[in-house]
Every structure is written in structure tokens, then in C-alpha cells.
Image 1 (cartoon, rainbow, N blue to C red):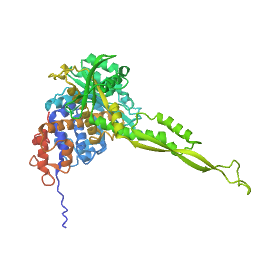
Image 2: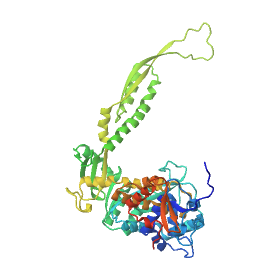
Image 3: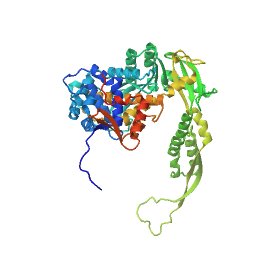
Image 4: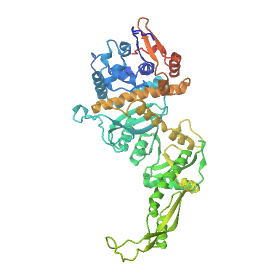
Length: 546
């Protein structure tokens, strides 16, 4: 094999990163950040460009980098075109990025993120009035110093005791978010890991009250449902849908479930679902409740009865295989007493008495004398236990466990109004609630795709600002996902596209002022298919706007 020592020098960067950075640029987010954040105008790298630089590696399917490694990602990139005249690879060092994170934090992260989301949604023609509220937590792998006086307004990480990633040994941040009906993240705020969910929900509602209009329908899990938050929603004139927790309003849920079980649930147009729609008095006035049964809920209830019921049955009856009784009557009486506590369990348990012969133990210690009588054989009794899972019994018990209930203040209607706030059918309310999974899509993006699960910065303010950056990356990704779903085509998700073009490089030919794509056969077609799907002009991939 011939070795060619002459190197081929090029300017370029991974195509997936270039596409995401171009969407951020052409949408106006980068320019909005630069207009909103106060910074030294003599600085080479502006705050908006710093955010743009940090999201580049996030969209490379092969790697995730700490701040100190960002500059190396752009070793071959035309940095002056991407980030401004005079910007070089060395300008992207961790100190420059950290200074910009400090300035972004001082601007007010919640307000700035909301403006960025509104801007890019308007740019791409997205205007959903559905707001999915939820919160999550994430671990930090570096302990910020609590002694920095500049960080008094920042959220500090704390041990939460219920980490979503099971890393209770690490400090946690919490994040409260809003995702709209198009799966686009609109709001993201960091909290200490031990802040209670109602506190975050109350803050989020206060923010919405100041920044949103009265057309919104707010959808959340059961953490939203307490009397104070519902009264706040009513005062906002915002409609809501939420899962109903057990303790709310003198356990009104128990009455709803009882009524549903004693009524014929109506078949739903949602396949496999059946529903019961009613109104009940609560401490917040009359509200609408929808009890429903779903295939997933039935499966989960059956799995619970099989798994947990087996554990409970074993805990109650396993001892009988070793425990000995002086007579058969004592053995069966004790067994039947325990069997009487075996309720609401799908395992059928049977006990059979068994005679056990054992040698009577001597009362004195040491070796018996030669003339001692032989030891007596003592008859005792044990109980052999058989446990069998009953599908029929489980199916009957499942009917009491697989009822879920949601609460809403959307008015009932036999036919949907143009605006669901004016009237919605049972199935429409249920569909809106079931779309809550879109929040989980956002969290999967933020954690596994964007790197929230590995935060290494050393100060709380920078950790909070870094969540803003990751939120911007998630926002850009969710916008591109929405466009791919709208247009169809080669790719359905950004993740799939980034994986497919991870080895494709965008090359810039400075002498010709032209770009091209290099990679395996068909690489260019893949990139152009991706660009067509999100509606991005290829000539804008390295352009700066504004």
C-alpha cells in the first residue's frame, strides 16, 4: 500500500452540527440573544455566538463535550464565517464561554428563553395554545461552590432522594418546563433539586399569567391538582386538564371510581378505551371528571397483580413450609387465620397438613449414659402451601384497579366547539390529556440527546445558564422535528437524521466561496433530503444573519 505523506487541508465541520447552527442563526435566536444580553462590545465572541458554538457539538451524534473541549470541535471550521470576523478556534476557549454564560444568567434566563421560543415558533408558523407542564431532575457531576456572592440568585443543586436517573448519591437540579402541542419547548427554569413540585408549578403559572393569553389549555400530571393551584388557574381564566390524585377534595376520586364501576362505561372512539364523564362538587366548585379504562392501564394492573400479588402471597405463606405445630388442628387454624388476610390478591392459596416425625431433644447436655432409654419420636405438623395465579380472579380484580380519572374545567359538549375552551367532547379531552407524553419526548431530548445528564460546570449560575443553552438546543431540535413531521420526506426525526449523516462533513472552499459535502456514496443526497424536510436553504448554512 502506498503512503502519501502530503496532507489535504480543508475547512469544514460535521454536517449535522452545521444544519442545527444554521437553523438557530436563520431563525433569529442568535441575534435575539445578542440584542438582549449586555456584554463588552470589544469582546470577540458574543453571547449569542457562544450559545451557537456550544450547541454545535450537541448535534454531533458521535460526541458530547465539556466547555473546555468545545474549541477542539471547531479545529477545521471556518470560525470567522460561523461566529464573526476575528473569531478563531482559540476564541472558543472555556473562559470565553463561561464569561458569556455569566452574562446570559444576569439577563434573566426565563424571560430570554420564552422570547427565543416565541421567535422561532413565529418564524416556522407554529402557534399551539396547548401547554404541557411538567418537571424533572438531573444530576450534576461537579459540586458548585455555595460561597460565590454572585450566585445568590442562582438555583443550587441538592440531594433530592428521588433522582429520576437513580443517582441519589449525586446532587440534583430540578427543571420545570412547558412544552406546547407541537412538542416545542417554550419554558425552562432550573431549581434546587429538593424544591417541591407545587412550588415549581405555582411559579410556572405565575410566569404564564404574565406572558401568555387566555386561550391556553394547560395540561399537567396530578402534581398540579391542589386547591390553591386550581384557584390560581381559575383566576387566570386558563382551562386545564390533569390527572386526579387520591387526596384531592375529600377523596372525591373514590366516589368517581365507585360511580364508574357501578355504571356502564361508554365506548370511546380511541381504540380500546371506555369512558365515564360526570360532574362533581369540590372545594373549588363544580368540576368535570372523566374516568376511563385503557388497554395499557389494564395491562399494568394485571402485571401489578401478578408481580406484587406473588410477593405478598410468598411473604404471608412461605413460613408454613418450616414452621412446626404440635397438632394438625393448630396448624390449619393458624393457616386459615393468615388466609383470612389474603384479600384482593389474584393468587389462589391452598394448604395441606403434613405430618412430620422428629427425634425429641434431650433436656440435659453431654453424651447420654449407656442405660438411658432411646429418644422418643415426636409427631408434629407443618402445612404444605400451593399458590396459583388465577387469570379469571385477576381479571375481576383488575376492574377495580385499572380505572384512571382526569379532572378538567373544559365545558362538556356533544360536539366539539371550534375552540375546545368553549366545549369539548369526552374523547377530545381524553386525547388532549394523553398527549402529555410529548413532555417526556422533551425530557428524553434534553437528557439523553442534549447532555443534561452530564453537567460539569463549577458555579450554580453557570449551571443554570448551561441548562438554558441545552434548552435552546432542545428548542431547535423540537422545531426541526415539527417541520419534518409536517413535510414528511426522508427523515421523521432529527435524531435519525443526525445518526444517518454523522460521518458527513460540510466543506467550505474559501477560494471559491462555495460549500460541498464529503462522505460515503450518497452523503450529499442525505443532507439535501434533511434540508428539504426542515425547509432550510443550503446557501444559508454558513451565513450570519442580522
